[in-house]
Image (cartoon, rainbow over all chains, first blue to last red; front, side, top):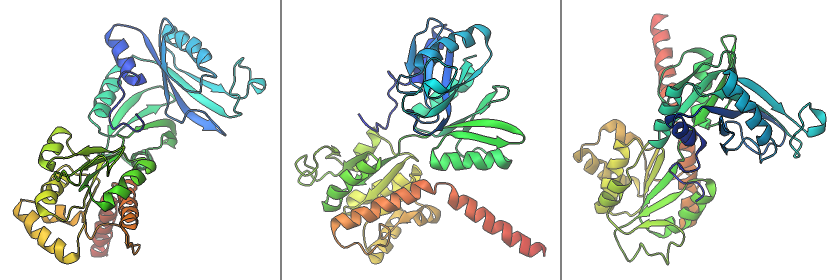
Amino acid sequence: MENSIYLDEARDPLIIAEGWMKDGKDVAIATVVETWGSAPRPVGSHLVIDAEGNFHGSVSGGCVEGAVVTEAIDVIDCGKAKMLEFGVADETAWQVGLSCGGRIKVYVERLG
Amino acid sequence: MDPYALKTLNAERRARRAAILVTDLGDGRDRIVREGDQVAGELGAAIAKAFRSGNSGSVEAEGRTFFLNAYLPQPRLVVIGAVHISQALAPMAKIAGYPVEIVDPRTAFATSDRFPDVALHAEWPEDALKRQPLDSYTALAAVTHDPKIDDFALKAALDANCFYVGALGSRKTHAKRVERLLALGATADQIARIHAPIGLDIGAASPAEIAVAVLAQAIQAFRSRGLEATASARKSESILEKHDA
């Protein structure tokens, strides 16, 4: 349903992250904190990741989630938050990019 | 993120209350700010703005960079009265991003033939609103013209602090309504929040035009949430300054 007045608990990344935490899992939360040009997901969007690489939500249309998950597992291990930046594939050091031509900044932090 | 902040945030979101997660991007510390919490300075001004717009973003304040993630409940519109105006209002509001529910106990009016694709409750507001209570992210428009149906819903909307409360009827009709609402225990401050006659004054003539006026007024109320309080605070400040001088 579009514009439901209630949270879609089964798909809401932050609700899922809280559930994982209650199950004793280590969790990282990635958040889009800035976008330039055309970006697939708005500022504030979340991707939540557990230590096994399971994830929910999105920070792009699927273009960079793989790289964010890899970085998130690292963040879970070392505990230090990271700021990631993704742009058009050829212009950045990242092996993945946003084919739409936009750029995004993603903040990845450990829960707890 | 602090686990306690996440729990608090999810509890607020489940309860349809607005909250902002404020993260210091320098040291990673975060905290939850609820709507109405007092935060001083530049950061406080940025937080107030984010509550109104619902937009998230970074802000520089006190020499630090903060990320404000604004979580606003989905605003919605409850219409009391399955009348001609409502038939135009329901699809318009849905397009504008405000899901609509219509309540009218008169089963001849509240039919799915007249209202396809709308959440329709053919029952008294007393019953419908008990099941799905009003809140500060709900707008209420009472358009039946019938005090038996409208009055209870209007009083409930004022008590729930709905961001918009509108009532159809002339000034004369409204004067009588005010007397009845006072008798029901509404305060003068509450009654002053009712938009009556309903809708922005755009000279609306047809039911569909009245629907546009109502929707525009509800959007205006939503996007200026909290500004009335700020404006009146400024007013009293300037009065104080005059007294000092």
